[in-house]
Length: 83
Image (cartoon, rainbow, N blue to C red; front, side, top):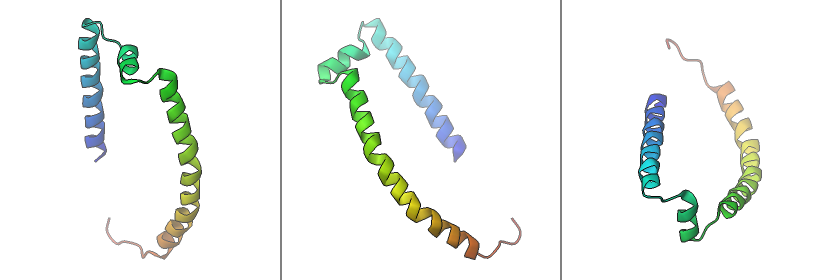
């Protein structure tokens, strides 16, 4: 599974670099595309920051519930023979 995810990530990176090189030959930049769509790099960073600020407290709250449940289930699970 890790191999498949890593392979997919490497393929994605290579194709993205290839497409970026082709677009650069046509004098198309990321700033131009973002401006045409209506975004600025600062706006995107602000959206990412707001999303992170929203997600972090929810992640911590969920982890505070899930980790003790996982520990109890792990301790109550009978040991496996063989593997």
